[in-house]
Image (tube, rainbow over all chains, first blue to last red):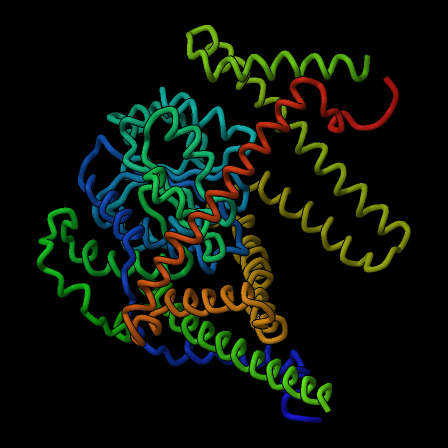
Length: 314
Length: 208
């Protein structure tokens, strides 16, 4: 068999083995590649950070996700919750998918380990699972009265009796709704919550959906977005640089840009704080590998095409 | 009657909801709020139907010992077990429901999605060919975006992430917006056809 033919007819199993190695090796031996920030992530971080320490404002996170998208989306959940707990930003969580409700429980339990002083229903409130059929009544109802629209938290307690709701009434007290989703990103919130009540909306999406959000970012209908594991890694980096040092991002001096160039040594950072960034090493290697596959595959294709052409001429 | 009454309901409510959007008066708002309460009733019916359908499909497969009927047993046992643990102990962290979720649902779901990387790599090698000018443009754009979305692209040149952002912000955005507008117009046209009774396939077959 000729070289070009062997390239074209390479057994898939070899490709799978190489991909598996490209995934596993950087996880065992991290490359420590730097994370570069993009504007949609920075905008979202800044927008959330603006309400640090306020008890009359909160953010709402919709966990529209399932275990299949967890490798990309769960690090976002963790990074945003850590930012909020560290900077004393009030958080509401909700899930219209049963599996999303379980992911909320997991994420809250994981982040709370580092913040024993953070109290449920005081500093954060998990609205729990609400049926997908209730999406519209709840989203529209929250524009008038969150406690009335949602009614109960995940443990069945009436929201109107909870301390967190004392100064929080409706969307006027919601800084941003973040939908972290493996499906259509944020469209329903843009239509109903932003369109009708003017509340800001942002999304966290899987990498395959990241391109879908650009039209909404350009029009300002989305104030920010986290795209795939990279988005999570960027947010994680901002949390480590600012929130973990208790630095106020909105008061950051624009000329003080050296933090952007700062290269963190991740080796001393515990895994729970660098989940996404560790994964980015793997993603970088796999991206390069896929590009190599495309190039090699095309080399084989062109050699074969040229050979066939020569045969035809003869 | 079986077709006329549903058609009348769809027509009346369709026009009322369109009017609600364009006439934001108190009456239309109250009507909309009242109607939203009815949606609470639909949910439980859908759950019952879904569970019934799942049980019927899989129990039939088991009874007939159809191909891979063993998986149907697993599906039914998983359904019963997860539902029972959720009802008995709740769904909070630390309950058996969460144990099932962490130890079965999460690894199984993540594994299925992870397979995508292998298929993409294989497809990139086997099928992604510069067969035409359009395919070549797509191929070059894909390579730049793949590099620009990881740190290696930035390390090679700061132009790569910049070009990536341009691709996403200009050609991608233009195409996406065009598609969105097309979908929107299509949805409006289809909705109008349904409201006016021109499109009736949703009623299913059968006699009047």
